[in-house]
Length: 259
Image (cartoon, rainbow, N blue to C red; front, side):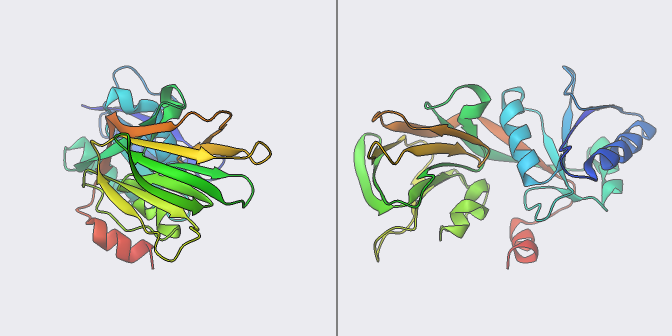
């Protein structure tokens, strides 16, 4: 029988109790389950919280290539496979009745370790609303220049997150592409650009000393940019294996959760 590990967001009031309910269901059906740590023999990780919990779990455990199921106790839960009132569907995983979707991840040389990996996006912007002069290079060739508040480099998974709010396109999460979307560009014709994921991206910014920019990974890891060296971003060698226990379709989830 498969072994399960549960990671939960202790800032969400119901996550601890739901984690215990999940553990009870799993153990009563003959499988092992641990809460709060991922064991060496873990076959499935269950992320209890919201999309943010799933993002941090995916970044941390991507090198182990363990399938991850998200259980939503938050608000949107677009990436999670189950709502907190659908826990009986956990039995489907134990019996092998589930689907996995391999999601591409990004990595930047600006950070190290799990902090350098993103399942949703890598964003370059300022803490203050000051226009940045941004150059985007594709395999060392100038692709586009923006005068904007920043730029979002997004995976297809991240196309329903910050990129969407900035006017970026919705992308089927199974596609192998990267989206480049300016934030509040000072232009009438600056739009997102979709590029193949095997192409390397470099971002160069012109920043005055008094208005520092920063790099944000999945909206959870932040680091200031303290030099003029271009920031390199490319497809990670790791991917995230996201589980669905329902025969859900990306577009039906889109219709239900994003209006």
